[in-house]
Amino acid sequence: MNSTAPSPLDRLAAAGVAIWLDDLSRERLRTGNLAELVQTRHVVGVTTNPTIFASALGSGDAYDAQLRDLADVGVGVDEAVFTITTDDVREACDVLRPVYDATGTVDGRVSIEVDPRLARDTDATIAMARRLWATVDRPNLFIKIPATVEGLPAISTVLAEGISVNVTLIFSIERYRAVVDAFMSGLESARAAGRDLGPIASVASFFVSRVDSAIDPRLDALGTPKAARLRGRAAVANARLAYQAFEDSLATERWHSLASSGARPQRPLWASTGVKDPAYPDTLYVDELVVDRVVNTMPAATLEAVADHGAVASPDSVTGAYAESADLLHALSTLGISIDEVTAHLEVDGVAKFEASWEQLLSTVSAGLHQHTSASQ
Image (cartoon, rainbow, N blue to C red; front, side, top):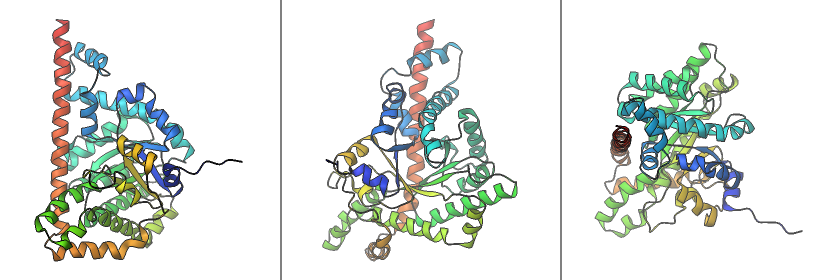
């Protein structure tokens, strides 16, 4: 009897990696493409961000009818963006609901981000997270909150209220440990309030490719053979050490206590996994970060590249490389490149980029509202 060899995506899923799509648009929903990816590409979750929504709203005419309706009733631009994005995410949650049920609420999740302009305002972030959660009104929703210093107490607060959270824009190991602490604090408060911890979920989105994009130019500027050998390796090393921190957190008495009360781990999520340097394999940040109990959220192009030629050679390309990863980051420091300084800059830059995308989104929606208002006069 003939048998078909497992595909790269088959092997990735079998290794315990949850494959999520880092994209959403009304066209993808209306055409059934998202449902198709669930069936054919092992997609078990969706992430969104301001850049994704800005791209979706700026392409095609899928939103024209809703923009016309919103313009007719005089809705402002901020409220229009809120309505449009929550409608898309609610529909995506419904598409993924069978996955959510089949995986015992672990996957089948769809993420929507708090307005990035609130990233430095704890109270406003909490208020917006509550509003998004109530408006989408689906149990398989994740509210994305950035891992800024101001975001950490917001994460704890909303988790304590039973709101599931995708913590985004994590770049450093130190900040990741603070995120884990915020996660456990939220669950402890939820338990103290008598909440069932089982349905409260969280992932910690650790950004990958941007680390290499920041460090490689510094290595190139040095122009030495040693620097050249380190190109394209820092991002994977940094992510692997984040997974080591994840394993360390699961070994603590604090976590054991929460787990005994029904809590589920906050899985690391590899974000920014699209390769930005064409000199590298286009599946680099998937192939090198295969390990159980993680999520890899991929742009559509990366997902298709992995499906076609991903080199998922091992069910674990992470846990045996901790010492090597630490040595690599030490080697960078001997060249005067501080991973802490790089990741601190990346957080500031990440918030700024999402704010810029949000402004682009607002501008696109404002133009659409104006167009339809003018047409009706």
